[in-house]
Every structure is written in structure tokens, then in C-alpha cells.
Image (cartoon, rainbow, N blue to C red; front, side, top):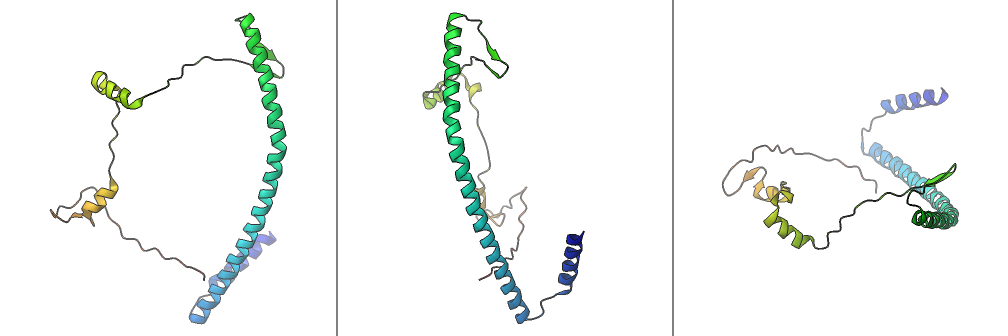
Amino acid sequence: MENTLLQNTLVEEREGFKIENLEGATWAFRKLRAIENKEVEIKAIAEEEINRVNAWKEKELEQYAKDKEYFNYLLEEYYREEKAKDKKFKLSTPYGKVTARKSKKWIYEDEENLLEYLKGNEPSCIRVKEEINKTEVKKLFKDGVNAETGEILPFVKIEEEENISVKVE
């Protein structure tokens, strides 16, 4: 409640302030620079702490990753050995299970020659992707008009935008 009251008071105070001259603008820039310096300081401290915590986390997890890999290997080996003895073998405990699933992986060894083969024999297996080359369109139609032919580009609207930026030096 106090925090909300404080924020409302600040908003009311700030709404009443207006820059009316160069001195006021200079004061506002100094305030902005001080705020940005404080933000940089806060971010640097936070980044340092984040890096420290992440380094600790990685070090701690590293030892468990090796153990995890080792136990996975042992379970997979046991599963393979038992599966070789009995094709219907299943490894299941209250703490986990090992399963296997067969799948087919397609390996395209020479896509260029395959593409040529399919063009000649099975063109339905070829996908053609059409898209607008926007860079070329902008070159050819300056401000939406073809300079050579005078043709106006249909289906395009060109809007002029003004970007205002405030930079603190």
C-alpha cells in the first residue's frame, strides 16, 4: 500500500514538471546519464553474480553428468545382453525402465545427383519455393515507381517513419 502511494505521488510530481528551456533540458540529460550509469552498475554486479552461480552450477553438475553417463551405459549393456538371449526381454523396475524402438533413418549421400534423378523420374518429389526478392523490388521500384517505365508498383504501401532517439553523452 505504501509503495503504491509513493508511486502515485511520484507520478503526480512528474506530471507537473515540464522542460521549458535549455537549462531544464540540460538538467534532464544529467538525470538520464546518472540513471543510465546506475543501470550499468546494477547490470554489471548482477552479471558477475550470475556468472559466479553458473560456474558453480556447471562444476556441480559435471560430476553428476559423468555418473549419469556411466550408469546409462551399464543399463544399456545389460539390456542388450539380455535382449540377445531373449527377444521378448523387458527391463522395468519401480525406479525406471529401458526400452528400445527401431526407426529408419534416411541418409542423403548426394543430394545434387538425387535432385537431378528426381527431376527426370519423379518430379512430384521436387518442391519449388517462390518468394519475393524484396531487395530487388526496392532497387527496381524506387519509392514504388519503376524509373524506366513509370509503372507504379501495386499491392505495396510505402510509409515514411520518423524515429526520434534520445542519446545521453
